[in-house]
Amino acid sequence: MENWHDLFPISHVQYLPMIGSDHRPILATLDSKIMRRWKQFRFDKRWIGLEGLLESIQRGWSTTRGEVDLSLVDRIQNCRHEISVWRKDKQPYGKQKIEELQRALEEVQNDDNSTQDELVDITNKLKEAYRDEEEYWKQKSRNMWLKDGDLNTKFFHASTKQRRAVNRIAGLHNDVNVWVAGEKEVEDVAVSYFDKLFTSSLLGDFTGVLEHMPHRITTQENEALVRHATESEVHDALFMMHSEKAPGPDSMTALFFQRSLHTIKNDVFKMVNNFLTAGTFDERLNMTHICLIPKTGRPSRMTELRPISLCNVGYKIISKVLCQKLKVLLPRGTETHSGLKVARACPPVSHLLFADDSLFFCKANVDKSQVLLQILKEYEITSGQQINLGKSSVQFGHTVEVGVRAEIHQILGISKVGGVGNYLGIPESIGGAKTKIFSFLIDRQQQRING
Image (cartoon, rainbow, N blue to C red; front, side, top):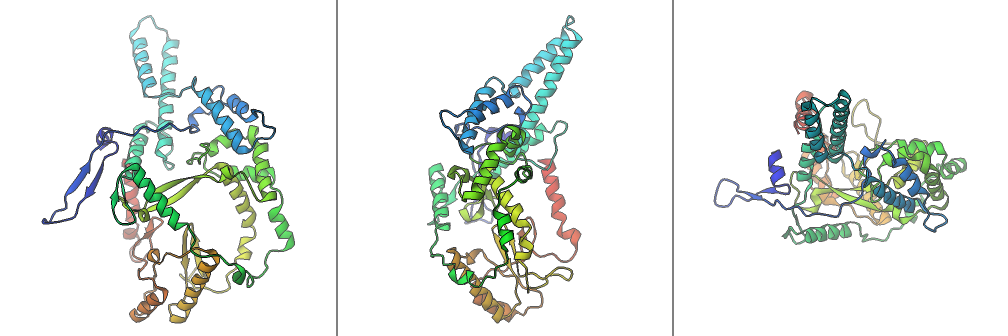
């Protein structure tokens, strides 16, 4: 499989319909040509500790280019430029360098006149090159669960190629169900999909909802929420982040901020508190990269791809500072007075929110279903967002009668039955032998280990 990916890095396979046969034909599209893109700057973990890096960061951060007070975004741009200049003379080890060191080591080993110091020096450089190469492919593989170890380079390399093959979008069906495969055409399908998805068809009116909401936050608590953040709060928010997660459009990982905090902390601190004071920040900080994660083995429609945003670290620092402030008050502000127990030992719940998914609980009868429907309609009117009933499902308890289930489906306008698939990687409904239900975890772990 590895050799296949090397020869045909952007190949893909499709199963065609069974027409006139009891077998499904397999169509393999082979293309060994890779479109070369402009190489984008990425802060590289392997630069940490190299001579001159911190000095280049200091130069970039302190460069004003005629401006009196640069924003954080502008300083990061200057920093990228200085690091790019520095790294031209400090290229990390690569495959070619490793081969050169291997030849040099062989020459020293075969030379009777070579000294022990020469042998040790080249051996150490080769070890460093191997570690460097391993670290590079670990970053590329986005593998966070396996620690660096002995000779994992091949595994990380294979993981990277496999991830690229799985994540590559060969083509998509457009709005009129026509398959398009060109890069520009696929781009148009994605833009059109998000345009419709995030365009509100309703004008939001919060008046009716807000007038019934009780005031739970006291004046003192509100002052605590809007007061300036302390250096400790900003520091903690930054170091809550995984240092190697994919960066946003500014190309700087959390590792860059963490390792250069002594140079940049005043500007980061100022950015956070300017937002808390004025409620605004540089709009470039709010820019993200949209990454599409496949929901199925071979997605062919935009609905089969889950979008996630790769945000700039500066934006995430502000978000985490706000979250930590709200965290203290949320348990009291979101107190649940009524709800259902979904298990004997659990507290009553009326709803659960996971990322962009919402789970609502109510008794399985007509009255409660109509109340839930009214709440959802009020949400649509207030927010301007429309609930996608086609993606929604209803899950019932085992004792709910078939007739009642059908009536509730009709009231809510949701035909899909839940509880039969997976959610966030685990079965929606868990019952029976646990060893059998969770056996897929062993299979998944073995697949990871085997690449």
